[in-house]
Amino acid sequence: MIVRELNNIKEIKQLNKSVEVDTVVTDFYACDLLSFLMGHATQEGTCLITAITNMNVIAIASLLEYSVIIFVEDMTPSEEVIMKAESLNIPLFKTTLSSLKIYKEILDYESQI
Amino acid sequence: MNRLYDFTINPNDLSQAGIASSFIKNILKKLNVNREIIRRVAIATYEAEINVVIHSYGGKCNFIITDNSLNVTFIDYGPGIISIEEAMLEGTSTASKYAIENGFGAGMGLPNMQKASDHFSITSSKEGTVISMLFKLGGDLNDC
Image (cartoon, rainbow over all chains, first blue to last red; front, side, top):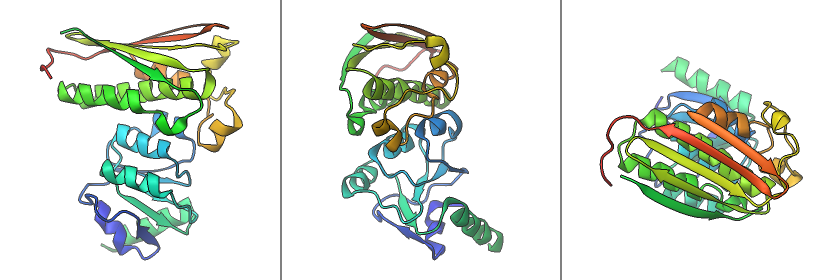
């Protein structure tokens, strides 16, 4: 999947539109414990699905070169966090759905194409 | 090539955490170090930086890059770790409410550092904790 294809899923909304979205998503990982992420979700290109919206999520996504972050449960990062992600070229999306439900939507989308 | 760098790390300011580890990562990228090695360095140094921020009264990070290795040292000014043996176990954490609310406190910090580095050492007393990590960078590095 390419990051931009997330825009084809109606439950997902992109938060920062001036970033690069041609990156390939190599893996999906849903987690709200950041140290756990550092130990387990180490693949470049990972799509992180999380309810944590602070600056540290952006720092980790940048350090580990994640392709995209999807914030779940209607959690919205601050403008400062969005701007930081934009400066690091990290696409941010959000959804009102839970981690499991949005991942199911992504799987359904992928099975249709 | 021998380069020594020094960073101050302030306590209880998670928004600034990651500055030292990002700096190290960017230097290694400029030196064309293998991406997987950079990834391990990023994990270990970010975890160490976060630990200084959330557990200590403040500290610093020194690192030196030689032709084929990176030596990073994190030094904080206390209060120290009561039991290093317990702290090295996955899932053991003494993180504050502030740290937990920000997604930390899974008790993975020290184990992640040990796994990600080629050599890891830690000493601790009430005066502070010192963590040293060595990473083999492999081959001759390009100048930056």
